[in-house]
Image 1: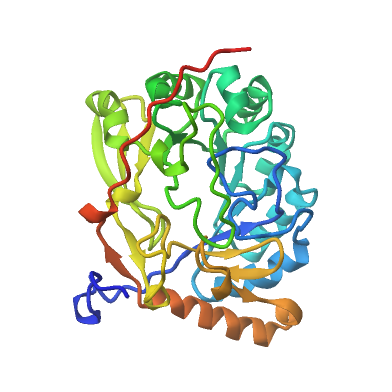
Image 2 (image 1 turned 180 degrees about the vertical axis):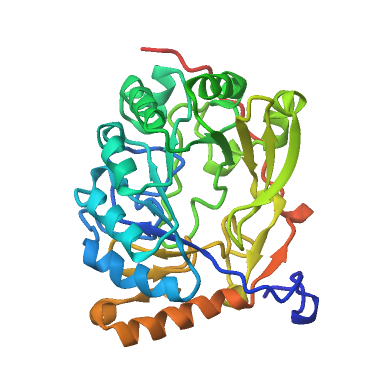
Amino acid sequence: MITSMDSPAQRQDSTVRLPQFRVTVNSRCGRACFFCRPSGEAVATGAGQELSVQDLLAVAVPLLAHGIDSIKLTGGDPALWEPLEEAVTRLREAGFAEIELISRHPRIGERAAALARAGVTQFNMSVDTLDPALHRQICGVDDLAAVLGALTQVVATGVPVKVNTVVMAGVNDGEIEELAAWCEKTGVATLKLLDVIRDMDSGAESFARRLAITRGGASIGSLYVPLHEVAAALREQAASVDVRSQGGLGHPMTVLRLASGFEVVLKDSRAGAWYGDVCTGCRFYPCHDALMALRLTADRRLQFCLLREEISVPLGEILHDPDQMDSVLGRALSTYATARFRPAGPDDEPARPVRLLPVVAS
C-alpha cells in the first residue's frame, strides 16, 4: 500500500494537473538499445503494430477539449512511420500548439525539412555517445556517423532541437562534458541527461537483461549514476540554475543554462515523482516514471504507466465513436486529478553502480 504520499488535504494546490500526451505511433525502432524496452514507450506491444493517422486523430482531437494541446510523437520510432508528415499537418490544423517528435533513427534527417514545414515545434533526438564502437555496443547498429549527420540536418531546419542522453555508470558517464560541448557547437538547444530506468526489468515486459559489455554481467539498475555528480563541471559553467517540470506531472528537473543560451537539463528520478489513486497497492511502487503521461499505444490502448499492462484501456471498437471516446478520455484523465507528489526517499537509493570494462573498438 502507498503509505508515504500526502493525504488529499495535504496536496500542494488545487491546480488541475494534466499529463503529457505521448503517442507510440509504431512498435519497433530497428535497434536494440540495452537500456530500453523492446516495445519502447509501451508495454508488451507486438512487432509490426502501428497507428493510422485516423486512429491518432480519433484520440488526439478530443483531448484538445480537455485542455491538452501538446503532443509527443514517439515509438518505436516515428522516423519509420510513413504517414508522419501527414499526421503532423493534421495535428497542427486541429489546434495542437506543440508537437514534439522523438527519434533516434538517421531517417529523421531526410524528413526533417518536410516535418518542419508541416509544423513540428521541437525535434528530440537521442545520442548516447560520440564513440562509434560504444554506439554500436549500446544500440546494436553501426551508424553513429549517420545519426550525427541526421542531427545536423534537423538543426538546419531552425526548429529547436533537444538531444536525449541516457547516462550510464562506467559506460558513457565520462564523456558528458564532451557531448555537451559538441551539442552546443552544433546548434542544439538543449541536452537532456536522463538516468537509467532502474525498474526496466519489472512489469509486463520484464526481460532481466544482462549486458555483454560488463564484467560478468550487470543489471540495468546497477548502471545508475547520480546526474548531479556527472554534471558537476557543467554546473560550474552555468550562468543560471533553475528547476523545471515537464508538463503538470513531470519530474522536477535541474536546468543549467550556459552563457551561450545552451541548456543542460538533468532528469533524475531521485527528484521525486507524481502518484495517483491508481498507484495504491501497486507492487512496483515507488517506480521510475510514475504517473507522468497518458500514452496512446501502437496497438490502440490508453496506457497510464510503463509497468502495468492490466490497467491499460483497450480502445477497440470505440476508437471511432466520438461520444464513447470522449467519455473514455474523461475517465482516463480523472486518474491524474488525484495525483500527489512524492519526493524520493532513502529506500529509493539504487544499488552501488558496477564499474565496467573499458570498451575496445573491434
